[in-house]
View 1 (cartoon, rainbow, N blue to C red):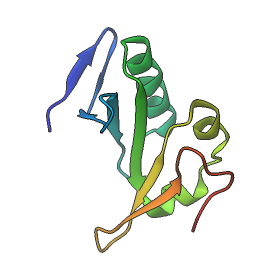
View 2 (cartoon, rainbow, N blue to C red):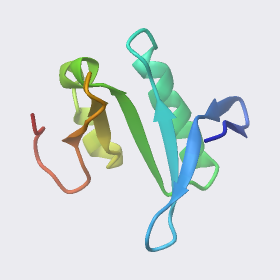
View 3 (cartoon, rainbow, N blue to C red):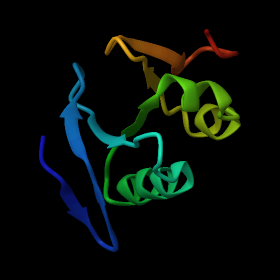
Length: 98
């Protein structure tokens, strides 16, 4: 995966959805600032990305208030110590899943 420059920021990568939508991917480690990641995803949408996804540690993801993710319909994913991915919030869900 390569970093992609968008105006004043960069995103960690991109993917293409099954129906052709562009998805911006932002990865944040335990020490990274999640607010900055949200800003990066906002800027990605300004540059014609249809969707954004934030991936962080499971511990950090479980502490996040998912209201912003619900508003923008962005998935929030947490990765545990075994490398397994857990969805905290996905588009169309009403509450977090632990």
